[in-house]
Length: 219
Image (cartoon, rainbow, N blue to C red):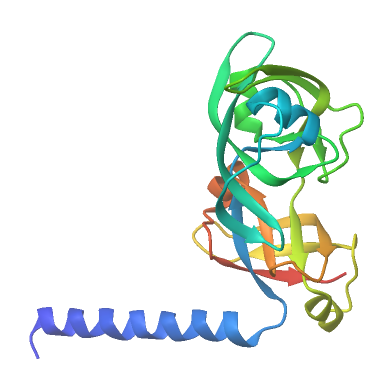
């Protein structure tokens, strides 16, 4: 066998070995979960949806996320105090009790705002922002956050790891940029997909993308 064929065989053997390893890890380990990278987005209350898109407007689903949650076809523009804007920010449905904007730390440099890192829903005293839609605009006195790292689990999956809602775990990332995330919040609900959500900054810093697999370390 000549040198070129030897190299080709080594490459084939290596690729096959990697595929087997990754597949077994994801399929047989109960403490491995897939990654979902969360882009900047906004959840709207009924009242704010009416102002931004018109009285009685209904969001139109673009992609189902989990349970009743979906990415809609509708987008808005975020405007910071310096009048710098980020356009085409996706609206997620269904409507919520309170409007909430979730952005990354990188986005804050554009908008010139300083939102806290919070679990979803904890918006009291958070950052301000203007939101512009096709029919109107709103001034949020609070509601802008950087979402904390969190893992969605089904009750069965959580029970297998002896975890419950609002527990915290560490997560190990094996890959091109090996690292460890500390104090990742566990969220448990029947209609969840088993998935860890991180923002684009965390994904880029650790070399992760949608569908990659990470390892939960229970405390």
